[in-house]
Image 1 (cartoon, rainbow, N blue to C red):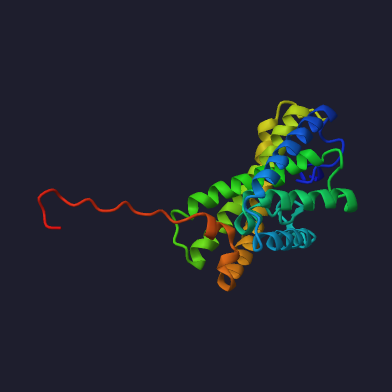
Image 2: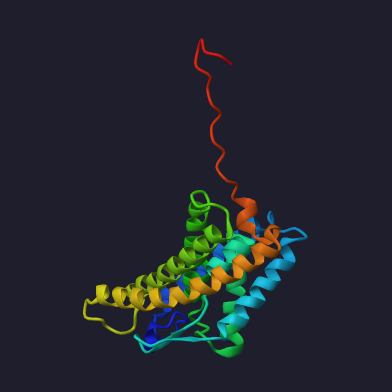
Length: 239
């Protein structure tokens, strides 16, 4: 079960595939830097630092998944996307992953591009796409925001886990005997349970911030509610 960890260790994926994803991660993060500069202001810049510090601290806390014999922790993609947006959010998660790999040995340094791709890029992107959809459908109340945070966080974790499945299919160092579907199902099942914990942490944090300072929640500012089309008067009728 150790090989199912989202923080991929050195040697699980071969070198060429790891190098390709490292280049991909670097290119996408460069784009995030360029795009994120448009969003940064006196409010978002300090918030980004707080989000990165919070994700780093909470990732130190593991919660057990008894049915799978493993433990999980916050990935943070949905939380970052909600509070500071997808571009800056991806950078926040990537910074946390770099520090964890270089300082704490959590995830192999050679696999850093893979881990960033899965957790910082895929996870944050999937979360924000769902956030953008749900905030246009659900009411912008604490309950609606909580549901949005929970669902987007849960789905983002499962999507990130399937990124690992793709990478293992491309360059896994252990032969699965063609049982890629089994690996995908196991990863999805385990991370669905982890996603429940992620969803609860994300929903609780975001709703708490929104109740105190709704202006600090990027998604509420950037994603405007749909404006209904103006009514068209009937020809010849009363105005």
